[in-house]
Image (cartoon, rainbow, N blue to C red; front, top):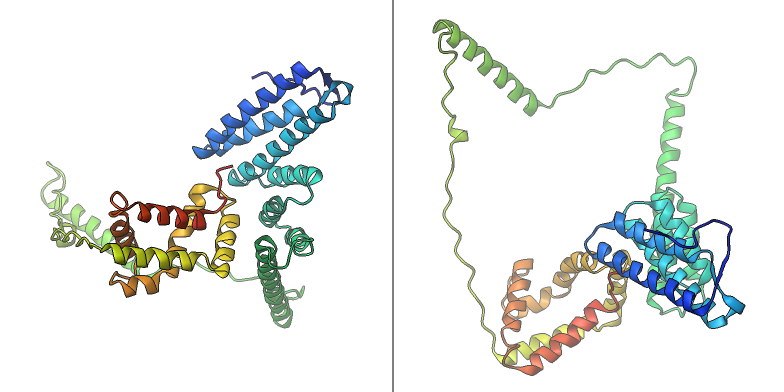
Length: 355
């Protein structure tokens, strides 16, 4: 676990051979961090990415070699970029914010990292700074139709609305308290409020006490030689058997129906509005594969409700799974089905990556 170049304040000027060795070590550590990230071991991923930043922080190429110094700077930026998402997933908000700062120092136009930084600020309670970062994306030189800019604008609007609502609620509570004399020094001390128990909980507590008393009385009558007899199980505690559910009927589609379904799916998910919504899902998932798929399930169902109804499938998650299975059954025999399926997959997944 040696971390070369980690002595703070000491610049290590290296020849080309050693620069390559350091970059190779950093790449190996990056792969280890990616594996930990994909296994959801975010704490270890954070450790690996921090090690990379330590390896590269005090390293420079001899004779100010431009290409090698640029390669070192790029590796350092990518390490901090990976650290920003790993730290967010490990709930290390300050570390994530710092990593985003370092990335934006090297690449001020990395709008994905700006979005991550806004999320870190939100978790730290710095909503003013979160809005500032989102506003920076909105005011950037991106085209007005750019998905990143549109998503930042929507998120900014949401934060502003929530902030205004919170301020109004606080102001109303303060005014109500002032009217009631809550802040007055002459206010009498508050009465001690006894802990309240719900009627349902009180019913079960009384029932348990009664059963306990009943067992004691029965044990006393029997002389306590064998101890109280075990109460017979109540009807509610008896095991209830249910009939086995019938297996779902398997739908079979014709090749023409499959082509019609896939063509409509491609049309639905290729729509610009739908693509913007998919980009929002990717950003919310930090472009992480598993989190994106988790958000994608209800989105796909909502978009295909009409398609399910048109082809006789239930408008539920089970119905969507049944339709996808019926389409996939033709992939082995019809290459065109696989080709359209791949096109649809690329439309939906976009540039989602693990790290």
